[in-house]
Image: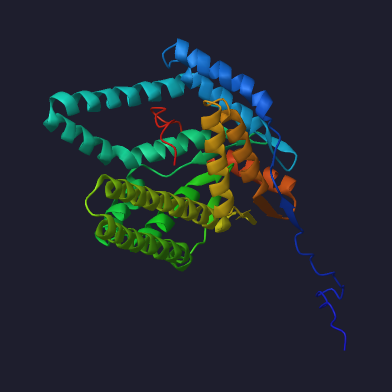
Length: 360
């Protein structure tokens, strides 16, 4: 027997509601290395001539170029930051660095106090950085926001790192999950809050792979060094081979960290939601290792002139491996986000525009 639609009290029949359509939107990056090279070289020269002061304007020009050349669902992104705000943050950062360098040379006690002070305020700097970038990023006329407080950052960015260290890194995956949860759920788009739905178990999978590779590398280095020392004795040749083994170990460690960065980045995005919409990140560690390695070779061989090409190349790869999966009309979602933004009131303004260079 065929199923029938239940009748209404009035005896009328209604068609079942249709499920929202699922649409996949992949960002497009349309920047070109030759085009960006002109911006990059002018930024570099003016920053040198002005002893770094122009670097704040250079950062804004760079960000605006990459934002404006990134298109999602037919609309480009906007970068709204004021260079003066970035310059203030950088001047404060430079002053702290200079104080650290001078105190390390002339007053070890003061140096220790400064280091402890910087460490104590680091979670607040992370929040200020996230808030600054979110407030100055917009899409379709709507700015993002980050609304978590500095005090709330001490758990994920100080408490959990300490626990991770005490546990010998066994709690590192949980630390990363808590940090991702804090960052994602602190963001808003219009009046909509991002949600994070990741579990700790998924974070232990890449950690287990990385830990196994690290153990193999470490054991291989120890046995290799012992074997070489036993064969050639305490000679210059033995010392060179030991240095080579240590170098290979650190290279392997660096590759493992790239693997973790890529896998954890995918986990963060794949577990994020914005209302009915979700995200997909499909970056691969081997691709990123190849990109980093080939970019480094190109930059070294061109004495730095290939840096714009490397940056454009990375931006294009990241856009090609990211997808926004929308449920229903994205235009309707934008309209709802605008309405909710109006209902929630004006955006919070920071007392200080710090943290522009303390990215997460």
